[in-house]
Image (cartoon, rainbow, N blue to C red; front, side, top):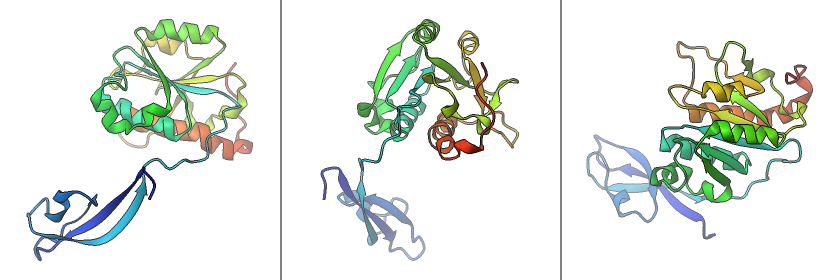
Length: 228
């Protein structure tokens, strides 16, 4: 067993009225007692989890890709997005405004150590950072439901030669209007229900995996190029 591997058990309550079935760490004393009725539990299955299993990385040669998280108020959302960034092979994340950094304990609860595999930096003013990134030759793409946004399914990251920074904004107000104005492109997710948007961490995960993985696999299916 590798140092990062952990044994988990699926336990079942012996109370004939309860029969709760749940997973628990194999070395946890609490697993022996049902969390609902407090009856004794038995192990019915066991699995070995590798908590840090190396996976083939994303090709970063074309193009470079980074994230800008501006004024994210939730540490849970921030940690989730850092974990998404690591899982998708993104290596650079800019944190701006009130976005909590990985030094916040609640960020670490959802990032689960992924922040240690990322290069991150905090910036008090996203507009100043955005202007600097643009001056360095990077494009900003906003993830926002605006009237002129391009549907995510019509966007192919391979059709741009410039490094791209995907921007997401506050859970309530969205992307700062002045920051949105600096984005050369805005993309949105298709919504079928009554709500206009998804949770910001969920939306970012969908967008990132589409842009970095799905668009590479189906590059020949796209005819819409990024706007000049």
